[in-house]
Image 1 (cartoon, rainbow over the protein chains, first blue to last red):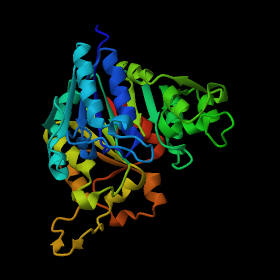
Image 2 (image 1 turned 90 degrees about the vertical axis):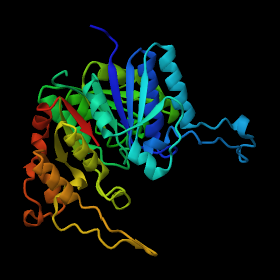
Image 3 (image 1 turned 180 degrees about the vertical axis):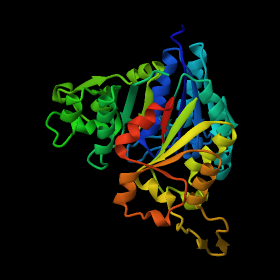
Image 4 (image 1 turned 30 degrees about the horizontal axis):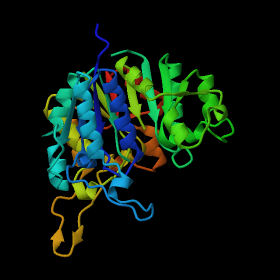
Length: 137
Length: 109
Length: 126
């Protein structure tokens, strides 16, 4: 039996609002590093995590320009994880709930992220070895 | 799906959010014969110090719940390994992935 | 695959979304053929009340025409054959009277929650 599993994560938090985001992405990274295939269903605020129009900024309090500040952008993190998956010979299938995208006006996502629905969540879950829901509060 | 094995991932600050329900669930699962790991991440690790009042950890240890704490979350909050309650072991986050891959029922609170 | 969905948070963005979005998602999963059950705990047990009324929200000339109604959402799931459980102690703690609740809810003591967990392949905590 293969040690490589298929794991599905459900995320709900909007960017820059909760430590759950960085922990979730750390979990996904560690899963990919170990060769597991990962599905993500981004629901509600989490559909904005991959929004391609996020922009880094300077920080006058730090005395840094935008480049020096190197402010994290979740969309960059996700793009890196998608690349990590490809390099590791596995996959990260990131699906944004389409209605949630429409409500929030975040229609442009980084490459490799696709639009879907809760039916995709069920399809992914059925084909997974396990599912972890990281709900918002 | 593995029967009778669970991982409960606690992320909330136990000083701001009542953790007693989660602890009670962990103990009930153990009494029902389940193998249970409580994995602390983020502000949930604030309960991990040996000097912490009202952590609820002794009761969990007594019930043989395995208690792990994300080593990154501990370091982020300035909690050194030497300060940890004897019931808690620091662990890398990939342990959660191992437990998920092993088919444990997984609840995040 | 049978999944137990634990719903605990109540009234989170329900006015903006016109639904409890977790219950809504479960309604979609059910239509997609998912075999599921719901466990309401914490303040989400409030959703079993028939008497919830969120009507009347207005901002300037905008008036909400479809306010959320979580009791209706639960009734729809029950009608679709989805078992909906609610933790008895959480109901009692909140002083909720059975006479004001929708029908079809299955009360469950906290002590029996683990037994419920064992009947499902996965438990998704929302």
